[in-house]
Length: 483
Image (cartoon, rainbow, N blue to C red; front, side):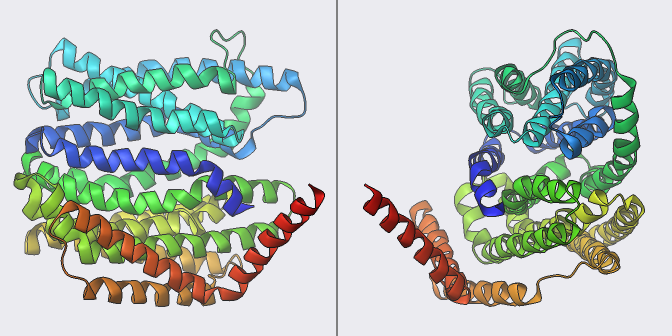
């Protein structure tokens, strides 16, 4: 079921991060470092504001939607949701003005504040409706909401920076327009109400009861994820962070891409199993999730470690190359260590309402990443800062696994060994290939690594592969006979 659901979510989970990666590369040719730093910091700040204003209700919807018991219940929910979305906008707009004043790339104007406000409001509502579409398993709507902003924002942004001005404000405006468009297209598909007739207390009470603790947890998670950006900006300035933002962002996005391929489908399945009282099956689902997650993240990190340097030289603008080359692979490792506990053991804590456990993990990660990032930056510069962040996330992952063992969760050790062996074989093959000196050669090298890894995994799971092939052949034979 997980693999089938993952394949259905695949367009959204591939296109969105692919265009995010493409945009990060493209903007190095348009934005100077301080504009890049401003763009990334404003975007990160919006994520925090979105957590405070809407995430508590979004996570409630994801956990307990769809409301299938009656049409009236659904109507009551939709009116309550609209009221909450509308009430979130003033706070979001006020925060946008503050962000524009602090992180704006130049002297703030009414126009620049309005652009940041548009970006904040559109991204917050887009993210909420995306989660609700996922909760309803409305994959077309989810795809539109996930893909619309990154894809069309990138295309509009290219036009704006090329023909108007290469600034962070132009990119924020482009993404804001794209996000509004995606929400307008998808909203009728999932059902919304434009004017709330009544706010129903039972939904608010349930959402606060479940989403409130998760909000605290999400806030801690945001700090754990983003403290690196603000530390570097504070210690070295926006321009220095802009230089690091490319390698840091690309590495994290590559790891996030692998993680979300699995996570988008896995959480609703585990939640549904728990709702049905099938705890053992839900635990098995999370173990399967862990195996698939490591199976995707391990080759991504290893591949970036080996070909990230040549890729940087071929794809990134010259002013950003040196820093990007130094930290790209390490940034992916730091992201992979964090995403491993977020999308496996931390999910178990949330599903079973062991919020204290998840909070402990986040506090460990915040304390460790802040202390080790600062120490690394002071002693060894950008590389030391990223290594410190990775070590901090690794400590948090070990903490999360130790707490999960108390709840009878076990990592699938045999599967992880198979993944490690396949990754080592892929790394050995890549090490034997000559360093790519052109984009076609780089693509060929990446494809070769994927093929080797795929073959190694297929060999490691030969019995399962044979069984799948046999079932497919049997199905085709029955279909041919029926015809």
